[in-house]
Image 1 (tube, rainbow, N blue to C red):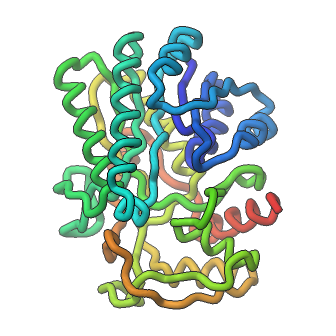
Image 2 (cartoon, one colour; image 1 turned 90 degrees about the vertical axis):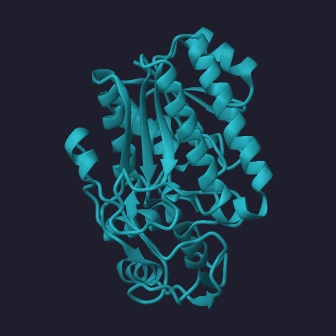
Length: 332
């Protein structure tokens, strides 16, 4: 099958591209490179020894989307493209609504036009807001606490309404928890432009002396050590989850929602300490006040994905920290 990956040169998109090629799918990538680099295409080719068709452009560009669908005969879409920083979304809400929502609408309209009714959507655990209980199940109440999360929740609503209007669509919504780590080759990993907004890329900046210290936002949450707790998942495990979701789509009509995480929560300080231990490196940090839009703890119940997708993560926190640092050393 031929799969279109929007935002496919990004962190999760590039790893999913590799796993798709590994199981002999053809892939086409569209990315505007706002937070990635086109060298990633070469890296994907280096890892897989297979070709990748790449279109540089924005998913909101319907003329380009029409060209891609007309030329490439796309069978399914995995929709990664979108701005993704919780903190930045609080500062720039209009930019997040404009970018994430309008581009998705353009994509769905073009998919409908060309009769491509198979889509895997990259959602987020942020749609659960501040959960009333842990671990988080897919049927929990939804309530985003920041504009980024609101865009994910709105897009989920787009997809729900689309399926109600036409139940010949095959839709999988994947609610990610916190991906970290990198491909074992060291060739691709999390490499955002500018100052990182996520924990692991910032740790790596400190490890390499590009930053003098790590900022830890909040130590007064009701958690094991006061710092925020998240469900961290290795990005390769997450990528394989997309392959399983795609397989599920082609064998099951309907709309399904899946949590993708490990089912375990680790605090910011546990991540820092594990990273220092496995990589034998010091990470200086300072405690700052809580960051707007953040919650204290968030980790998944992943039993539905295990049951229906036959998927479960295989890599632990040690692997995540080792592979992340290996990528950072390799790219220097």
